[in-house]
Amino acid sequence: VFRQVFSGTNIDESAWQELEDTLIMADLGASAAAGVVDRLKSAVKKSGAVSAQDLVALAKRELTEFVDGGYDRSLKTNRHDDRPAVVLTVGVNGTGKTTTTGKLARMLSAQDKDVLLGAADTFRAAAVDQLKLWGENVGVPVVAKDMNSDPSAVAFDAVTKGVAIGADVVIIDTAGRLHNKVNLMNELTKIKRVMQKVVEDAPHEVLLVLDGSTGQN
Image 1 (spheres, one colour):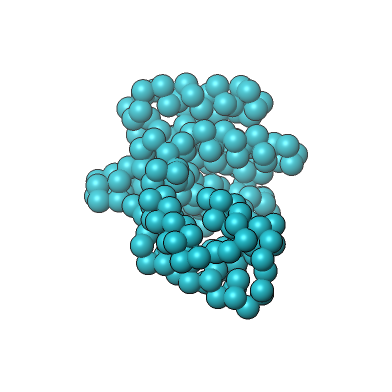
Image 2 (cartoon, one colour):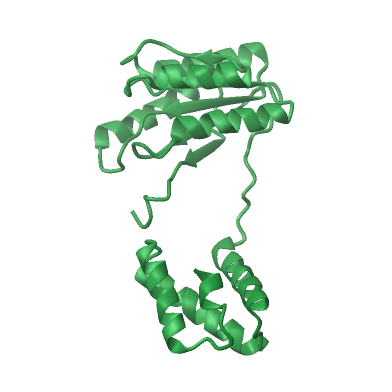
């Protein structure tokens, strides 16, 4: 979209409007889309850039600064003295939590970290088998129980085993849930409380997994 808008020799108001409309349709949100366009307009005016290549580079830089926020984006996956780092993956249904958990395990294993997975999504059919397959492919152990088992019990066993075997990282995969489902949110609270019986400051990282269709929601 940006390359299309910036491909001509002149960026007129209709081009900016097309860009704003496209951002809104991509679920960026009306106010955010207007803010991005205003920021780019100002940057283009100040820089005097005219070539499509320079304009795209300018848009990339401005958008990176727009979403950066100065946050520390590093993952807390370093071992804490005699305890493993504990990571919890959460999110709504169908966003790819289990896949993300598997990919994260592969990435950390490639960094020579000893990883242990906990299959605490005991609600979705085949979720445990999916994580076990990831474990086999990546070469990391998986702690699991039968379907419909108490997920907090899985989390407790996984963290306990992680401490026992000297794992660097324990990643707990959880079932999909909406924020307005009180009983399911309370289940996450229970998982956290139970894990803290083993590692008092667990989890050290909570990853909210989103996909491209989640958008402003």
